[in-house]
Image (tube, rainbow, N blue to C red; front, side, top):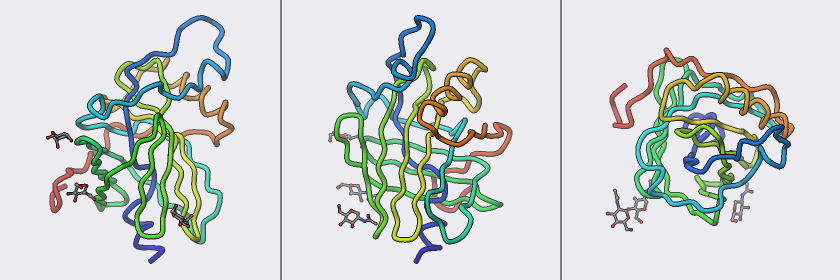
Length: 188
Ligand SMILES: *[C@@H]1O[C@H](CO)[C@@H](O)[C@H](O)[C@H]1NC(C)=O
Ligand SMILES: *[C@@H]1O[C@H](CO)[C@@H](O)[C@H](O)[C@H]1NC(C)=O
Ligand SMILES: *[C@@H]1O[C@H](CO)[C@@H](O)[C@H](O)[C@H]1NC(C)=O
C-alpha cells in the first residue's frame, strides 16, 4: 500500500491561485511575506497550473521520496487532477478537496493531505503549503505554481524569502523544458 499511494501522489498536489497581491512596501518582513489568502473562490483557480518551484521537507519516510520532473494540476470546481512526470512515467491522481477559508484538505485511503493558500505578488501564481500525513510517511512542502512554465527572477526571490520565513529546506526550481503530462488517462 505504501508504495502505491507514494506512486500516485509523489511530490506536491493541490493548488489554488493568488489573485491578491502582497503589498509592495519595502522592506518585506516574514509577516508581510507569509499571509494566508483572505478568501478562496474555487472559480479563480480553474484550469491548468504548472509547478515552478518547490521546497520539500521530509519529516518521516521509509524510502527516499521520489521527485518529479514536472507537476501539473488542473482544477474544475473543487475537483483537481494532478499529473506528475516522474522518471519516464506520468502519474495521474484526482480528488475533491474541502475548503475552509484559506485551508484545504483531502484524503486518499489512510493518507491525509492538508495545506494553506498564501498570497504572492506574482499575479499568475498560486502559493501553497502541502502536508502529507501517511502512517509511515510525513512530508511538508511549500509549492509555487504558475500559469506559466517559468516565473521571473523577482518571483523566485520572493519565493526564496518565503521558504526561509517558513523554515523550509532550500527550494528547487523546476526545469520548464520538461514536458507536462496530459490529464487525460492514457496519454502523455
Ligand atoms: C461547478 O459547480 C457548480 C455548482 O456546484 C455547477 O453548477 C457547475 O456546473 C460546476 N462546473 C463544473 C465545470 O463542473
Ligand atoms: C468528486 O465529487 C463528485 C460529486 O460528488 C463525484 O461525482 C466525483 O466522482 C468526485 N471525484 C473524485 C475524484 O473523487
Ligand atoms: C486522517 O484523518 C482521519 C479523520 O480526521 C483520522 O481518523 C486519521 O487518523 C487520519 N490519518 C492519519 C494518518 O493521520
